[in-house]
Image 1 (cartoon, rainbow, N blue to C red):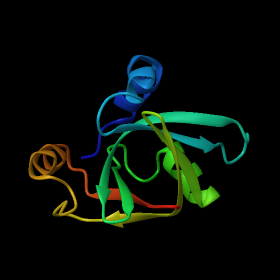
Image 2: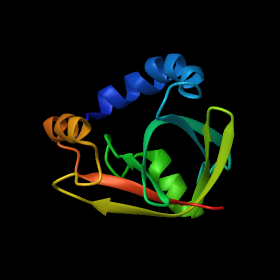
Image 3: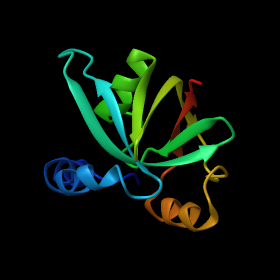
Image 4: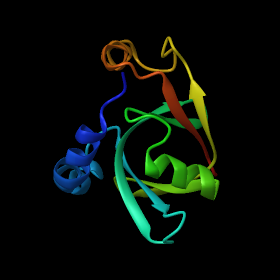
Amino acid sequence: MVLSKKVARFNRVATNRVLGPLSMWLPGFAMIVHRGRRSGRTYRTPVKTFRVADSLVVALTYGPDADWVRNVLAAGGCEIETRTRIIKATRPRVVRDERRTTMPPGVRHILGAVGVTEFLFLDRVS
């Protein structure tokens, strides 16, 4: 069970408007900057990121069919804004991991409770 579309809609309308500006300053949070596949419009989506080797990982709490994920995959990358840095990310790929092995233990437990098994991996461009 991944989070429902109703929760996603509420978060997009309410939570993201509050968390969005704060995400730039909260540890581990970032803003994914991506372009719409059809509109070409620039979107900013607040996410929690995790570092794994040279990659950044985002748990796909709404699944791999979320618009922002599809936009990043179609574009072949995105920018990630965190604190005062802008990181270019490329080679996006969705990885299914039923055991959530790339996540820290506490996060692994929470993601398991809501049924998250898919993650977006992005390589950092140096």
